[in-house]
Every structure is written in structure tokens, then in C-alpha cells.
Length: 85
Image (spheres, rainbow, N blue to C red):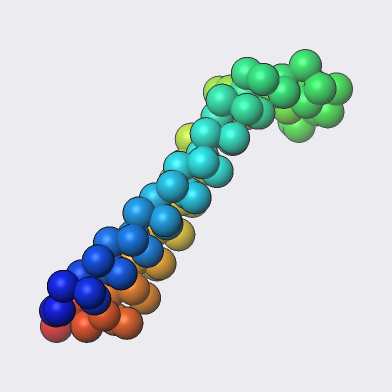
């Protein structure tokens, strides 16, 4: 892999990381702490939505983000021909 391709590859990888971790931050910190008062007006399964995000929603979001990241990185590896053969 040339130096230019290597830099492009890592730039896209870091972009994916920043975006996905920002989503996780908004789900865990934002929905569970900052916006919990507004979200507590909505109920899911008898529990307030702000409480649900703080206890379980952030974990579900993180697991989904892991699968999204794996998918994005597999596509990126294929594009730059650094995938496992």
C-alpha cells in the first residue's frame, strides 16, 4: 500500500470512529443524562425512556455500533485491498 493510500485509509477509519463514538456519546450521555427529563415523559414497557436509555439503551446502541463498524471496516478493507484473504 502506498503512503498516500495508507493515509487515506486511516483518515476514513478515524472518521468512522469519530462519527460512531459521537453517536454512542449522544445515546449514552445525551439521552441517559442530559435529555433524560424530556425523555422521561415517554414510557417503554412501563419504564421512563430516560431511565431506559441510561440502563439499557446505551448498551444496545453500543452493540449495534460494533456491528456497523465491522461492516464499514470490511468494506473499507476491500476497497483498499487490505482485507483478509
